[in-house]
Length: 360
Ligand SMILES: *Cc1c(COP(=O)(O)O)cnc(C)c1O
Image (spheres, rainbow, N blue to C red):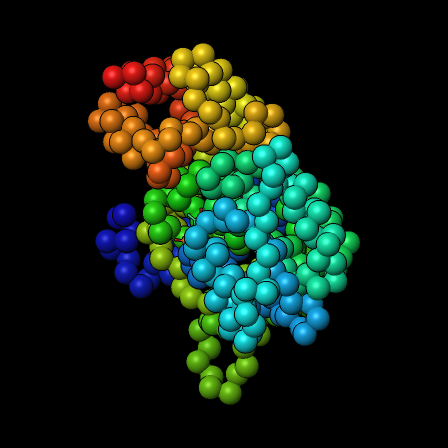
């Protein structure tokens, strides 16, 4: 904050670290969170806008291969983005976008893999939430990636609810692209700078469709020569276009350095214990239906429960009692103990308050 107050534009060079390449430092801190190399991970912009920029490069429908596969319960912003991308290519979403809805006993992963197989070589893009925002279900991204690639499709994941929540190995799984925000598990405040991943195999092959100076080589970024062509960096940074907001980046830096220090393996170990305790207490004390898969390897930190018609009322009662959870009206409550800062006692207290509200 002192540098912000005193350096002004000079912060580009005199900030510590210098603001000119601050986004690259933050991106390097996030490589362990998403399982990508430094050249595959970039930081900038916001999630939905980044999704459009990436899809402009990665969703290139042809007459035959044009279909997009998503979930019925995808986050509304992702659905809007997919529909508008399809329309932008003069296609009709009604016969281009397939939204799968798994049966009651079927995992989303199995439903997706079956749909991928039946769409075959008409499938152009699979776009799914790595962890579903509503149910908290964690997909088997490696299996889905393999299935999509077996029919020649591009596959990407929205990691808004997965980054900082579950261990990710995007590079090793072979995922083509991914995007996330930094203000859910990554704790950086609403609207904070987001990030994305582009697999190494596409770098230098698939080019950014929309160019801007921050995607250019830093050495020539400030050259104002009108004759010069845009030379995208041959890394995920090539998809950047603007100067990032430094104050917001400082928040992402602070949060991501904690994730870097603690590591996803330790966070995952505590997460499994926290959610096991949460589910056990919910069963024992509330009897509520748990929407999230009960197998630990099919969920992250989020446990969703069903309170028919009462989600908003229960949420506000709990908030008044100091328990911060989230409601998805009319029926769903989301409880997400974060291993970085939620204690076991707080999990116990949350369920105890929930029990009191339900029986009041
Ligand atoms: C939170 C969230 C968003 C919101 O993205 P912004 O563009 O940063 O507002 C988009 N998609 C998913 C899946 C989300 O959870």
